[in-house]
Length: 321
Image (cartoon, rainbow, N blue to C red):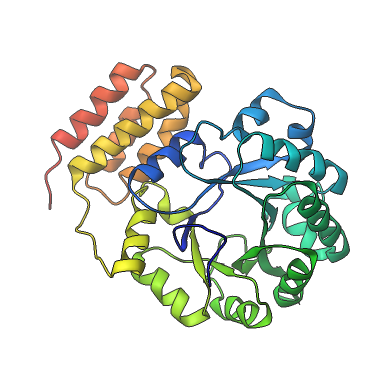
């Protein structure tokens, strides 16, 4: 089943503080895959908060960007959806799965799985607000005693959603344990709109396994792409052509990390970017030899030239085991 007119079955998951412009551009540079923005708070977007406005503005990006909105007030969703449309969104995704306490406490994210009538009103409002297609991302349920993904999916379809994404964990599980692919399969059998499966897709092979097991129309990849921005394109190539990519060389890892750091600097400015880059350094060198010492050195750096020099020093002296 075709998912709108996306050119891929693979989606980069929306991750707050992660899938910003530098990350989206980097993932796109490796090849095909669908790009989703960070979560955009509807209350801040509606009042044109400068920081939020910038997060939502994707007009200069040459690839399609799904802009994800989060909130709990139907009328504010109307304003936010219209602004997202003006700011270049290809389509709009509504976050009804975020488990974070701050989001849930604002009657947003996965809280909406407990209030289906409110969730339905939100979807209908957004569908009517712009000509853009609307999708919904949600979870298996609130907790093990409240599993309602199938019923919720049917509501989304009836409310006008063009496709849905299902994370195979409850809100109570956050990101722990094993994702339940059976619930994704059940949702797929219950609706006619495309279904994207999310949870435990860590490789091209796992992506194909999820699609085969669940019958889903696409996969969404989140945490596995951290420090692996090439993963989205690798999964796409494997699903479409059966291509198994060679192991990424340490030189490519180094150049990609440097590109990411410089992209952060261009977007945020040097001081903020260097702080943000520390988490990426951890992800890029995960499971590499002597990575702990490298990280310890890097977190003490406070200027770009020293940061670049430290990255070069580590990778240029790296000896494969």
